[in-house]
Length: 273
Length: 288
Image (cartoon, each protein chain N blue to C red):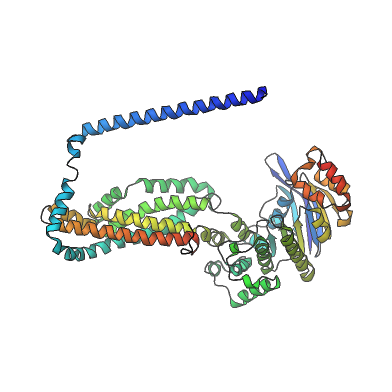
Protein backbone atom coordinates (compact mmCIF):
# COMPACT_ATOMS: atom_id res chain seq x y z
CA UNK A 1 0.00 0.00 0.00
CA UNK A 2 1.63 3.18 -1.18
CA UNK A 3 0.27 6.70 -1.44
CA UNK A 4 2.40 9.14 -3.34
CA UNK A 5 2.00 12.87 -3.98
CA UNK A 6 3.80 14.18 -7.06
CA UNK A 7 4.07 17.96 -7.24
CA UNK A 8 0.47 18.43 -6.15
CA UNK A 9 -0.88 21.99 -6.09
CA UNK A 10 -4.29 23.44 -5.44
CA UNK A 11 -4.92 27.08 -6.25
CA UNK A 12 -7.93 29.12 -5.09
CA UNK A 13 -7.91 32.36 -7.08
CA UNK A 14 -4.44 33.81 -6.58
CA UNK A 15 -3.69 31.80 -3.44
CA UNK A 16 -2.06 28.39 -3.48
CA UNK A 17 -3.72 26.36 -0.71
CA UNK A 18 -1.41 23.44 -1.49
CA UNK A 19 1.85 24.37 -3.13
CA UNK A 20 3.84 21.77 -5.05
CA UNK A 21 3.65 19.00 -2.45
CA UNK A 22 5.60 15.81 -3.08
CA UNK A 23 5.76 13.01 -0.53
CA UNK A 24 5.01 9.34 -0.20
CA UNK A 25 3.42 7.22 2.51
CA UNK A 26 3.93 3.52 2.63
CA UNK A 27 2.12 0.72 4.45
CA UNK A 28 -0.17 0.84 7.45
CA UNK A 29 0.80 3.71 9.65
CA UNK A 30 -0.57 6.66 11.53
CA UNK A 31 0.46 9.93 9.89
CA UNK A 32 -0.40 13.25 11.46
CA UNK A 33 -0.57 16.47 9.46
CA UNK A 34 -0.09 19.60 11.55
CA UNK A 35 -0.03 23.29 10.77
CA UNK A 36 -1.95 26.50 11.31
CA UNK A 37 -5.47 27.08 10.04
CA UNK A 38 -5.24 27.72 6.32
CA UNK A 39 -1.95 25.86 5.96
CA UNK A 40 -3.53 23.49 3.43
CA UNK A 41 -4.07 20.41 5.62
CA UNK A 42 -7.76 19.96 4.86
CA UNK A 43 -7.30 20.69 1.17
CA UNK A 44 -4.61 18.01 1.04
CA UNK A 45 -6.84 15.39 2.66
CA UNK A 46 -9.88 16.32 0.61
CA UNK A 47 -7.91 15.83 -2.58
CA UNK A 48 -7.03 12.27 -1.55
CA UNK A 49 -10.73 11.45 -1.14
CA UNK A 50 -11.54 13.49 -4.27
CA UNK A 51 -13.90 15.81 -2.38
CA UNK A 52 -11.70 18.45 -3.93
CA UNK A 53 -9.71 18.42 -7.14
CA UNK A 54 -6.08 19.42 -7.53
CA UNK A 55 -5.00 22.19 -9.87
CA UNK A 56 -1.93 20.21 -10.95
CA UNK A 57 0.13 17.16 -10.03
CA UNK A 58 -0.64 13.52 -9.35
CA UNK A 59 -1.73 11.50 -6.33
CA UNK A 60 -0.92 7.85 -6.88
CA UNK A 61 -2.33 4.99 -4.84
CA UNK A 62 -0.56 1.77 -5.73
CA UNK A 63 0.41 3.37 -9.04
CA UNK A 64 -3.16 4.48 -9.93
CA UNK A 65 -3.52 8.22 -10.38
CA UNK A 66 -6.59 8.90 -8.27
CA UNK A 67 -6.82 12.49 -9.51
CA UNK A 68 -7.51 11.15 -13.01
CA UNK A 69 -10.48 9.02 -11.91
CA UNK A 70 -13.97 10.12 -12.85
CA UNK A 71 -17.56 8.88 -12.72
CA UNK A 72 -17.96 5.34 -11.41
CA UNK A 73 -14.20 4.83 -10.98
CA UNK A 74 -13.99 7.93 -8.79
CA UNK A 75 -16.92 6.77 -6.65
CA UNK A 76 -15.31 3.31 -6.36
CA UNK A 77 -12.18 4.98 -5.05
CA UNK A 78 -14.20 7.04 -2.57
CA UNK A 79 -15.88 3.85 -1.39
CA UNK A 80 -12.42 2.44 -0.50
CA UNK A 81 -11.01 5.67 0.95
CA UNK A 82 -12.89 6.58 4.12
CA UNK A 83 -13.06 10.04 5.56
CA UNK A 84 -13.85 11.25 9.08
CA UNK A 85 -14.76 14.92 9.50
CA UNK A 86 -14.44 17.50 12.27
CA UNK A 87 -18.23 17.97 12.41
CA UNK A 88 -18.87 14.21 11.95
CA UNK A 89 -21.01 14.83 8.79
CA UNK A 90 -23.62 12.27 9.76
CA UNK A 91 -27.26 12.49 8.71
CA UNK A 92 -28.58 13.81 12.02
CA UNK A 93 -32.20 12.73 11.74
CA UNK A 94 -31.37 9.14 10.77
CA UNK A 95 -30.59 6.41 13.24
CA UNK A 96 -27.05 5.41 14.09
CA UNK A 97 -27.12 2.03 12.33
CA UNK A 98 -28.41 3.63 9.10
CA UNK A 99 -25.59 6.15 9.27
CA UNK A 100 -23.09 3.31 9.61
CA UNK A 101 -24.70 1.46 6.68
CA UNK A 102 -24.17 4.57 4.57
CA UNK A 103 -20.57 3.41 4.37
CA UNK A 104 -21.80 0.89 1.78
CA UNK A 105 -23.55 3.42 -0.47
CA UNK A 106 -20.80 3.27 -3.07
CA UNK A 107 -21.04 -0.52 -3.30
CA UNK A 108 -24.75 -1.25 -3.33
CA UNK A 109 -27.33 -0.52 -6.02
CA UNK A 110 -28.83 2.96 -5.85
CA UNK A 111 -32.39 1.64 -5.78
CA UNK A 112 -31.83 -0.69 -2.83
CA UNK A 113 -30.09 2.02 -0.82
CA UNK A 114 -32.78 4.62 -1.56
CA UNK A 115 -35.36 2.32 0.00
CA UNK A 116 -33.12 1.22 2.87
CA UNK A 117 -33.13 -2.36 1.60
CA UNK A 118 -29.93 -3.50 3.30
CA UNK A 119 -29.24 -7.21 3.56
CA UNK A 120 -29.32 -8.84 6.95
CA UNK A 121 -25.60 -9.52 6.62
CA UNK A 122 -24.94 -5.80 6.08
CA UNK A 123 -27.02 -4.87 9.11
CA UNK A 124 -25.28 -7.48 11.26
CA UNK A 125 -21.89 -6.16 10.18
CA UNK A 126 -22.88 -2.59 11.01
CA UNK A 127 -23.96 -3.69 14.49
CA UNK A 128 -20.73 -5.63 14.97
CA UNK A 129 -18.71 -2.54 14.11
CA UNK A 130 -20.75 -0.43 16.50
CA UNK A 131 -20.17 -3.08 19.16
CA UNK A 132 -16.44 -3.00 18.50
CA UNK A 133 -16.47 0.76 19.04
CA UNK A 134 -18.51 0.41 22.24
CA UNK A 135 -21.68 2.12 21.03
CA UNK A 136 -23.84 -0.84 19.97
CA UNK A 137 -26.59 0.17 22.39
CA UNK A 138 -27.00 3.45 20.49
CA UNK A 139 -27.80 1.71 17.17
CA UNK A 140 -31.49 2.65 17.10
CA UNK A 141 -31.11 6.24 18.30
CA UNK A 142 -31.06 9.24 16.03
CA UNK A 143 -27.49 10.36 15.38
CA UNK A 144 -28.34 13.89 16.57
CA UNK A 145 -29.27 12.53 20.00
CA UNK A 146 -25.70 11.37 20.67
CA UNK A 147 -22.84 13.30 22.26
CA UNK A 148 -20.08 14.69 20.04
CA UNK A 149 -17.68 11.90 20.99
CA UNK A 150 -20.28 9.23 20.27
CA UNK A 151 -21.15 10.85 16.94
CA UNK A 152 -17.51 10.81 15.95
CA UNK A 153 -17.34 7.12 16.80
CA UNK A 154 -20.40 6.56 14.58
CA UNK A 155 -18.52 8.40 11.82
CA UNK A 156 -15.55 6.07 12.40
CA UNK A 157 -17.95 3.10 12.29
CA UNK A 158 -19.25 4.37 8.94
CA UNK A 159 -15.65 4.55 7.77
CA UNK A 160 -15.00 0.97 8.93
CA UNK A 161 -18.16 -0.19 7.13
CA UNK A 162 -16.38 0.87 3.94
CA UNK A 163 -13.59 -1.58 4.84
CA UNK A 164 -11.17 1.03 3.56
CA UNK A 165 -7.44 0.73 3.06
CA UNK A 166 -7.02 4.39 3.94
CA UNK A 167 -8.84 6.37 6.60
CA UNK A 168 -8.54 10.15 6.35
CA UNK A 169 -9.45 12.12 9.47
CA UNK A 170 -9.87 15.88 9.05
CA UNK A 171 -9.47 17.45 12.51
CA UNK A 172 -11.33 14.52 14.10
CA UNK A 173 -11.06 15.83 17.66
CA UNK A 174 -11.24 19.60 17.12
CA UNK A 175 -14.90 19.73 18.22
CA UNK A 176 -14.51 17.42 21.20
CA UNK A 177 -13.66 17.80 24.88
CA UNK A 178 -10.36 16.23 26.02
CA UNK A 179 -11.97 13.02 27.34
CA UNK A 180 -13.89 12.35 24.14
CA UNK A 181 -10.89 13.41 22.07
CA UNK A 182 -8.82 10.72 23.74
CA UNK A 183 -11.48 8.04 23.15
CA UNK A 184 -11.69 8.98 19.45
CA UNK A 185 -7.91 9.07 18.97
CA UNK A 186 -7.52 5.73 20.80
CA UNK A 187 -10.16 4.28 18.49
CA UNK A 188 -8.41 5.54 15.37
CA UNK A 189 -5.08 4.21 16.62
CA UNK A 190 -6.62 0.84 17.43
CA UNK A 191 -8.16 0.36 14.01
CA UNK A 192 -4.90 1.41 12.40
CA UNK A 193 -2.79 -1.11 14.35
CA UNK A 194 -5.29 -3.99 14.61
CA UNK A 195 -6.62 -3.82 11.04
CA UNK A 196 -3.44 -2.68 9.32
CA UNK A 197 -5.01 0.38 7.70
CA UNK A 198 -3.30 3.60 6.68
CA UNK A 199 -4.57 6.51 8.77
CA UNK A 200 -3.84 10.14 7.90
CA UNK A 201 -5.15 12.67 10.40
CA UNK A 202 -5.08 16.44 10.44
CA UNK A 203 -4.38 17.42 14.01
CA UNK A 204 -4.10 20.76 15.70
CA UNK A 205 -2.41 19.80 18.94
CA UNK A 206 1.21 18.79 19.02
CA UNK A 207 0.85 16.53 22.04
CA UNK A 208 -1.76 14.48 20.15
CA UNK A 209 0.52 14.23 17.15
CA UNK A 210 3.40 13.09 19.35
CA UNK A 211 1.33 10.56 21.21
CA UNK A 212 -0.45 8.81 18.35
CA UNK A 213 1.51 9.32 15.15
CA UNK A 214 4.29 7.26 13.59
CA UNK A 215 5.06 10.11 11.27
CA UNK A 216 4.31 13.82 11.34
CA UNK A 217 4.04 16.15 8.38
CA UNK A 218 4.12 19.88 9.08
CA UNK A 219 2.54 22.26 6.60
CA UNK A 220 2.87 25.99 6.30
CA UNK A 221 1.36 28.15 3.55
CA UNK A 222 0.54 25.09 1.47
CA UNK A 223 4.06 23.66 1.59
CA UNK A 224 5.47 20.73 3.52
CA UNK A 225 8.00 22.23 5.93
CA UNK A 226 8.51 19.20 8.15
CA UNK A 227 8.36 15.49 7.55
CA UNK A 228 9.69 13.25 10.24
CA UNK A 229 9.13 11.17 13.33
CA UNK A 230 7.16 12.62 16.25
CA UNK A 231 10.22 12.79 18.50
CA UNK A 232 11.86 15.09 15.97
CA UNK A 233 9.08 17.60 16.56
CA UNK A 234 11.03 20.00 18.73
CA UNK A 235 10.03 23.50 19.76
CA UNK A 236 12.19 24.94 17.05
CA UNK A 237 10.47 22.82 14.43
CA UNK A 238 7.05 23.77 15.84
CA UNK A 239 8.02 27.45 15.60
CA UNK A 240 8.92 26.91 11.99
CA UNK A 241 5.62 25.13 11.25
CA UNK A 242 3.39 27.53 13.15
CA UNK A 243 5.31 30.66 12.28
CA UNK A 244 6.87 32.17 15.41
CA UNK A 245 6.43 35.74 14.32
CA UNK A 246 4.31 38.66 15.54
CA UNK A 247 1.10 36.74 14.85
CA UNK A 248 2.28 33.79 16.90
CA UNK A 249 -0.09 34.39 19.80
CA UNK A 250 -3.17 33.59 17.73
CA UNK A 251 -5.44 31.23 19.61
CA UNK A 252 -5.25 28.68 16.81
CA UNK A 253 -1.66 27.96 17.68
CA UNK A 254 -1.88 28.35 21.44
CA UNK A 255 -3.21 24.85 22.08
CA UNK A 256 -0.43 23.49 19.95
CA UNK A 257 2.18 25.27 21.95
CA UNK A 258 0.66 24.27 25.27
CA UNK A 259 1.33 20.71 24.26
CA UNK A 260 5.08 21.26 24.00
CA UNK A 261 5.65 20.28 27.64
CA UNK A 262 9.25 21.04 28.64
CA UNK A 263 9.31 24.22 26.57
CA UNK A 264 6.05 25.66 27.83
CA UNK A 265 7.77 28.62 29.44
CA UNK A 266 9.40 29.52 26.17
CA UNK A 267 6.08 29.15 24.40
CA UNK A 268 4.30 31.29 26.99
CA UNK A 269 6.92 33.97 26.53
CA UNK A 270 6.34 33.89 22.78
CA UNK A 271 2.60 34.04 23.22
CA UNK A 272 2.96 37.10 25.39
CA UNK A 273 4.49 39.00 22.50
CA UNK B 1 -12.99 61.62 25.07
CA UNK B 2 -10.32 61.65 22.41
CA UNK B 3 -10.77 63.47 19.11
CA UNK B 4 -11.35 60.16 17.35
CA UNK B 5 -14.07 59.19 19.86
CA UNK B 6 -15.78 62.56 19.42
CA UNK B 7 -15.66 62.13 15.66
CA UNK B 8 -17.12 58.61 15.94
CA UNK B 9 -19.93 59.87 18.19
CA UNK B 10 -20.71 62.67 15.74
CA UNK B 11 -20.73 60.23 12.83
CA UNK B 12 -23.06 57.89 14.68
CA UNK B 13 -25.45 60.72 15.60
CA UNK B 14 -25.45 61.95 12.00
CA UNK B 15 -26.22 58.44 10.82
CA UNK B 16 -29.10 58.16 13.31
CA UNK B 17 -30.53 61.51 12.15
CA UNK B 18 -30.30 60.36 8.52
CA UNK B 19 -32.10 57.10 9.32
CA UNK B 20 -34.89 59.00 11.10
CA UNK B 21 -35.27 61.37 8.17
CA UNK B 22 -35.52 58.51 5.68
CA UNK B 23 -37.98 56.68 7.94
CA UNK B 24 -40.15 59.81 8.20
CA UNK B 25 -40.07 60.34 4.43
CA UNK B 26 -41.10 56.75 3.76
CA UNK B 27 -43.99 57.11 6.21
CA UNK B 28 -45.18 60.33 4.50
CA UNK B 29 -44.99 58.68 1.05
CA UNK B 30 -46.85 55.64 2.34
CA UNK B 31 -49.67 57.72 3.87
CA UNK B 32 -49.93 59.84 0.69
CA UNK B 33 -50.16 56.69 -1.46
CA UNK B 34 -52.85 55.21 0.77
CA UNK B 35 -54.88 58.43 0.73
CA UNK B 36 -54.63 58.92 -3.04
CA UNK B 37 -55.34 55.23 -3.66
CA UNK B 38 -58.43 55.42 -1.52
CA UNK B 39 -59.71 58.49 -3.37
CA UNK B 40 -59.16 56.85 -6.76
CA UNK B 41 -60.85 53.64 -5.67
CA UNK B 42 -63.78 55.48 -4.12
CA UNK B 43 -64.29 57.56 -7.28
CA UNK B 44 -64.43 54.42 -9.40
CA UNK B 45 -67.00 52.74 -7.14
CA UNK B 46 -70.56 52.61 -8.48
CA UNK B 47 -71.63 54.11 -5.16
CA UNK B 48 -69.47 55.91 -2.64
CA UNK B 49 -67.66 53.92 0.01
CA UNK B 50 -69.09 55.88 2.91
CA UNK B 51 -72.59 55.92 1.43
CA UNK B 52 -72.53 52.13 1.13
CA UNK B 53 -70.62 51.28 4.29
CA UNK B 54 -73.62 51.18 6.62
CA UNK B 55 -75.31 48.61 4.33
CA UNK B 56 -72.37 46.20 4.52
CA UNK B 57 -74.22 43.75 6.80
CA UNK B 58 -77.56 43.85 4.95
CA UNK B 59 -76.85 40.86 2.71
CA UNK B 60 -75.52 38.53 5.45
CA UNK B 61 -78.48 39.59 7.62
CA UNK B 62 -80.92 38.68 4.85
CA UNK B 63 -79.28 35.27 4.37
CA UNK B 64 -79.14 34.48 8.07
CA UNK B 65 -82.69 35.62 8.64
CA UNK B 66 -84.01 33.25 5.99
CA UNK B 67 -81.81 30.40 7.21
CA UNK B 68 -83.12 30.91 10.77
CA UNK B 69 -86.70 30.63 9.67
CA UNK B 70 -85.84 27.39 7.86
CA UNK B 71 -83.47 25.98 10.52
CA UNK B 72 -85.19 22.59 10.38
CA UNK B 73 -83.91 22.18 6.81
CA UNK B 74 -80.26 22.73 7.76
CA UNK B 75 -79.25 19.09 8.53
CA UNK B 76 -80.68 17.94 5.20
CA UNK B 77 -78.98 20.82 3.37
CA UNK B 78 -75.67 20.03 5.09
CA UNK B 79 -75.92 16.37 4.13
CA UNK B 80 -76.80 17.30 0.55
CA UNK B 81 -73.62 19.37 0.25
CA UNK B 82 -71.31 16.58 1.50
CA UNK B 83 -70.68 14.90 -1.91
CA UNK B 84 -69.69 18.26 -3.39
CA UNK B 85 -67.42 18.89 -0.39
CA UNK B 86 -65.73 15.52 -0.92
CA UNK B 87 -65.14 16.47 -4.55
CA UNK B 88 -63.58 19.76 -3.43
CA UNK B 89 -61.37 17.95 -0.91
CA UNK B 90 -60.38 15.41 -3.56
CA UNK B 91 -59.36 18.13 -5.97
CA UNK B 92 -57.32 19.82 -3.21
CA UNK B 93 -55.68 16.55 -2.11
CA UNK B 94 -54.71 15.39 -5.60
CA UNK B 95 -53.41 18.86 -6.49
CA UNK B 96 -51.35 19.00 -3.31
CA UNK B 97 -49.85 15.53 -3.77
CA UNK B 98 -49.05 15.94 -7.48
CA UNK B 99 -48.01 19.58 -6.97
CA UNK B 100 -45.84 18.56 -4.01
CA UNK B 101 -44.01 15.86 -5.96
CA UNK B 102 -43.40 18.24 -8.86
CA UNK B 103 -42.29 20.92 -6.40
CA UNK B 104 -39.76 18.53 -4.83
CA UNK B 105 -38.18 17.92 -8.20
CA UNK B 106 -38.17 21.61 -9.15
CA UNK B 107 -36.82 22.62 -5.73
CA UNK B 108 -33.83 20.28 -5.96
CA UNK B 109 -33.16 21.32 -9.55
CA UNK B 110 -33.15 24.99 -8.57
CA UNK B 111 -31.15 24.89 -5.33
CA UNK B 112 -27.49 25.88 -5.36
CA UNK B 113 -25.27 23.15 -3.97
CA UNK B 114 -27.78 20.41 -4.81
CA UNK B 115 -28.71 21.01 -8.44
CA UNK B 116 -27.14 18.51 -10.87
CA UNK B 117 -27.05 21.19 -13.59
CA UNK B 118 -26.21 24.47 -11.83
CA UNK B 119 -26.38 26.45 -15.08
CA UNK B 120 -30.05 25.57 -15.49
CA UNK B 121 -31.00 26.87 -12.02
CA UNK B 122 -32.31 30.22 -13.41
CA UNK B 123 -34.43 28.34 -15.97
CA UNK B 124 -36.15 26.22 -13.31
CA UNK B 125 -36.57 29.25 -11.06
CA UNK B 126 -38.26 31.28 -13.80
CA UNK B 127 -40.51 28.28 -14.54
CA UNK B 128 -41.63 28.32 -10.91
CA UNK B 129 -42.09 32.11 -11.03
CA UNK B 130 -44.42 31.79 -14.02
CA UNK B 131 -46.43 28.99 -12.43
CA UNK B 132 -46.69 30.95 -9.18
CA UNK B 133 -47.58 34.21 -10.90
CA UNK B 134 -50.52 32.70 -12.77
CA UNK B 135 -53.59 32.78 -10.51
CA UNK B 136 -55.42 29.44 -10.33
CA UNK B 137 -58.60 31.10 -11.53
CA UNK B 138 -57.00 32.31 -14.77
CA UNK B 139 -55.49 28.89 -15.51
CA UNK B 140 -58.78 27.24 -14.59
CA UNK B 141 -60.75 29.48 -16.98
CA UNK B 142 -58.37 28.63 -19.83
CA UNK B 143 -58.52 24.92 -19.01
CA UNK B 144 -62.31 24.95 -18.69
CA UNK B 145 -62.41 26.52 -22.13
CA UNK B 146 -60.09 23.79 -23.48
CA UNK B 147 -61.27 20.74 -21.52
CA UNK B 148 -64.77 21.70 -20.52
CA UNK B 149 -66.06 22.35 -16.99
CA UNK B 150 -65.44 19.93 -14.13
CA UNK B 151 -62.99 19.02 -11.40
CA UNK B 152 -60.15 17.96 -13.74
CA UNK B 153 -59.64 21.51 -15.00
CA UNK B 154 -59.70 22.81 -11.42
CA UNK B 155 -57.28 20.14 -10.27
CA UNK B 156 -54.82 20.92 -13.07
CA UNK B 157 -55.02 24.65 -12.39
CA UNK B 158 -54.33 24.21 -8.66
CA UNK B 159 -51.59 21.66 -9.31
CA UNK B 160 -49.80 24.05 -11.65
CA UNK B 161 -49.95 26.83 -9.08
CA UNK B 162 -48.79 24.42 -6.34
CA UNK B 163 -45.72 23.48 -8.43
CA UNK B 164 -44.57 27.08 -8.38
CA UNK B 165 -45.67 28.06 -4.89
CA UNK B 166 -44.42 24.93 -3.12
CA UNK B 167 -41.33 24.67 -5.31
CA UNK B 168 -40.22 28.12 -4.18
CA UNK B 169 -40.77 27.30 -0.49
CA UNK B 170 -39.17 23.86 -0.81
CA UNK B 171 -36.17 25.40 -2.54
CA UNK B 172 -35.71 27.93 0.26
CA UNK B 173 -35.80 25.17 2.86
CA UNK B 174 -33.36 23.08 0.82
CA UNK B 175 -31.03 26.06 0.45
CA UNK B 176 -30.78 26.26 4.24
CA UNK B 177 -30.11 22.56 4.64
CA UNK B 178 -26.80 21.52 6.13
CA UNK B 179 -24.46 20.28 3.41
CA UNK B 180 -22.18 18.42 5.83
CA UNK B 181 -24.22 15.20 5.73
CA UNK B 182 -24.23 15.47 1.93
CA UNK B 183 -20.46 15.82 1.97
CA UNK B 184 -20.24 12.83 4.32
CA UNK B 185 -22.21 10.73 1.85
CA UNK B 186 -20.17 12.03 -1.07
CA UNK B 187 -17.01 10.95 0.71
CA UNK B 188 -18.17 7.30 0.75
CA UNK B 189 -18.87 7.35 -3.00
CA UNK B 190 -22.64 8.00 -2.93
CA UNK B 191 -24.21 9.09 -6.22
CA UNK B 192 -26.36 12.21 -6.69
CA UNK B 193 -29.69 10.48 -6.00
CA UNK B 194 -28.30 8.85 -2.88
CA UNK B 195 -26.91 12.16 -1.61
CA UNK B 196 -30.20 13.97 -2.14
CA UNK B 197 -32.47 11.20 -0.90
CA UNK B 198 -30.41 10.21 2.15
CA UNK B 199 -28.60 13.44 2.95
CA UNK B 200 -31.06 16.22 2.11
CA UNK B 201 -34.57 14.76 2.23
CA UNK B 202 -34.35 13.63 5.90
CA UNK B 203 -33.36 17.17 6.83
CA UNK B 204 -36.00 18.99 4.83
CA UNK B 205 -38.85 16.45 5.12
CA UNK B 206 -40.46 17.97 8.25
CA UNK B 207 -40.52 21.48 6.80
CA UNK B 208 -41.51 20.29 3.33
CA UNK B 209 -44.39 18.26 4.79
CA UNK B 210 -45.38 21.21 6.92
CA UNK B 211 -45.52 23.50 3.86
CA UNK B 212 -47.41 20.82 1.89
CA UNK B 213 -50.04 20.61 4.65
CA UNK B 214 -50.34 24.39 4.66
CA UNK B 215 -50.72 24.24 0.87
CA UNK B 216 -53.46 21.62 1.29
CA UNK B 217 -55.42 24.10 3.43
CA UNK B 218 -54.92 26.82 0.82
CA UNK B 219 -55.86 24.42 -1.98
CA UNK B 220 -59.16 23.54 -0.28
CA UNK B 221 -60.11 27.21 -0.41
CA UNK B 222 -58.81 27.54 -3.98
CA UNK B 223 -60.74 24.44 -5.03
CA UNK B 224 -63.94 25.85 -3.49
CA UNK B 225 -63.43 29.18 -5.26
CA UNK B 226 -62.79 27.48 -8.62
CA UNK B 227 -66.23 25.90 -8.35
CA UNK B 228 -67.56 29.39 -9.00
CA UNK B 229 -66.08 29.37 -12.49
CA UNK B 230 -67.31 25.89 -13.30
CA UNK B 231 -64.64 23.62 -11.89
CA UNK B 232 -67.15 21.61 -9.83
CA UNK B 233 -67.20 20.87 -6.11
CA UNK B 234 -68.82 22.77 -3.31
CA UNK B 235 -68.02 26.14 -4.90
CA UNK B 236 -70.33 25.33 -7.78
CA UNK B 237 -73.17 24.48 -5.38
CA UNK B 238 -72.54 27.68 -3.45
CA UNK B 239 -72.62 29.76 -6.60
CA UNK B 240 -75.86 28.12 -7.76
CA UNK B 241 -77.51 28.69 -4.37
CA UNK B 242 -76.35 32.32 -4.21
CA UNK B 243 -77.54 33.00 -7.75
CA UNK B 244 -80.93 31.52 -6.93
CA UNK B 245 -81.28 34.19 -4.28
CA UNK B 246 -84.11 34.33 -1.78
CA UNK B 247 -85.54 30.91 -1.16
CA UNK B 248 -82.26 29.01 -1.11
CA UNK B 249 -80.34 30.95 1.48
CA UNK B 250 -80.63 28.00 3.89
CA UNK B 251 -78.42 26.07 1.42
CA UNK B 252 -75.96 28.97 1.33
CA UNK B 253 -75.64 28.91 5.12
CA UNK B 254 -75.32 25.12 5.16
CA UNK B 255 -72.53 25.19 2.55
CA UNK B 256 -70.71 28.00 4.36
CA UNK B 257 -71.01 26.16 7.67
CA UNK B 258 -69.68 22.97 6.09
CA UNK B 259 -66.78 24.76 4.43
CA UNK B 260 -65.92 26.63 7.63
CA UNK B 261 -66.07 23.44 9.71
CA UNK B 262 -63.92 21.58 7.17
CA UNK B 263 -61.29 24.29 7.10
CA UNK B 264 -61.19 24.46 10.91
CA UNK B 265 -60.84 20.67 11.17
CA UNK B 266 -58.15 20.45 8.48
CA UNK B 267 -56.35 23.43 10.02
CA UNK B 268 -56.37 21.87 13.49
CA UNK B 269 -55.19 18.47 12.25
CA UNK B 270 -52.49 19.98 10.04
CA UNK B 271 -51.34 22.29 12.87
CA UNK B 272 -50.82 19.31 15.15
CA UNK B 273 -49.22 17.25 12.40
CA UNK B 274 -46.87 20.10 11.47
CA UNK B 275 -45.87 20.68 15.08
CA UNK B 276 -45.15 16.97 15.42
CA UNK B 277 -43.10 16.94 12.22
CA UNK B 278 -40.99 19.96 13.13
CA UNK B 279 -40.43 18.92 16.73
CA UNK B 280 -39.64 15.35 15.80
CA UNK B 281 -42.66 13.54 17.20
CA UNK B 282 -42.81 14.98 20.69
CA UNK B 283 -45.91 17.11 20.88
CA UNK B 284 -47.21 16.50 24.38
CA UNK B 285 -44.18 17.12 26.53
CA UNK B 286 -45.01 20.69 27.42
CA UNK B 287 -42.39 22.07 25.06
CA UNK B 288 -43.20 25.26 23.21
